[in-house]
Image 1 (spheres, rainbow, N blue to C red):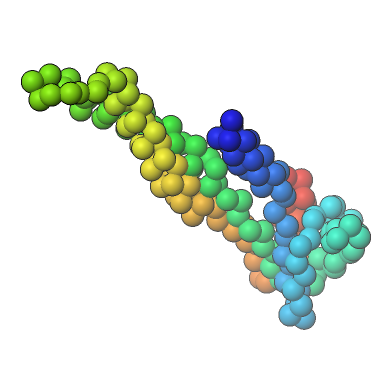
Image 2 (image 1 turned 30 degrees about the vertical axis):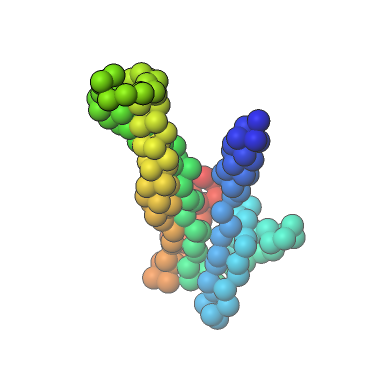
Length: 164
């Protein structure tokens, strides 16, 4: 019962993390950096953003760079690692099973299934950790450098970004 509650808590936390929208950071020509922005729309010569629930217009000409932190792929990597490690561990556990020799005295044998289960659990845990680390490192930042772009190029790129 306790394991079920822990797993439920882990999966609930994972869903909450995956549901978060990564906020944008915008660097302006005067050096100011605006953080935690949600892109809304491009209207005329301005980008409309939302910051803490309040709409704000930013002149397209003033934008030098836009950045959004890459979404972590931890849970995807951990899931794939768990499945691959679990399957590999189960096969290794099954392949290494040896029936105990009764001549050695008292033996307790649960059969090849127990070996496969133990191997699957150990392999799954190892795969979860390794896959999670690989997945977490796979998320890259999305960066747009507007410093050398014309006004029309900036508008075109901003419209594409907002349309995503």
